[in-house]
Image (cartoon, rainbow, N blue to C red; front, side):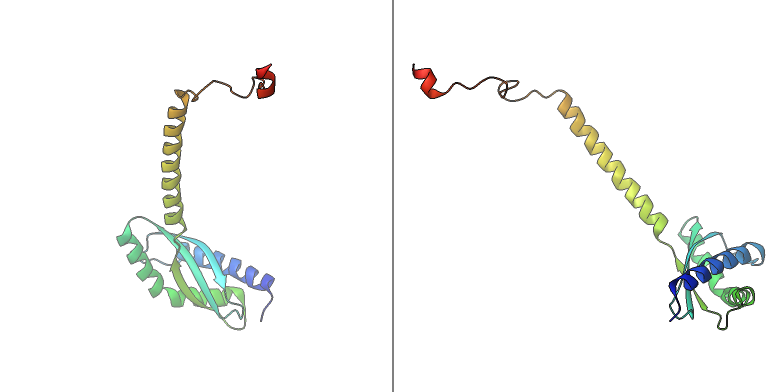
Length: 147
């Protein structure tokens, strides 16, 4: 088991190497606008999961995933060459769902803001039921009222 600091440093370095290699060396026409968002390395440093996003529609995501899978060997050898670790971690590419989740959350927040605006509009014209301020008047006790 490796310490967490070393795994974190290695994952940051792998992220940088993979992003630079995709930008500079991979010339696959199927590869779209890919952004490497995160890399997570297992505790034994043998496996690395590379999270990425693709700008575009579903077809571009599928073609970019195929391009990344075909370039996996080149990327792994480049990671091994630049990191100098004893065992080069195997790379697994995972489409990051964070942008989709963020978009869905923004839509839900917009719906909640619209509902809050409706409640605010209803509150503006509302008048209290009964007296305007029933708590400010002193209460008269029944014993005092009988006298």
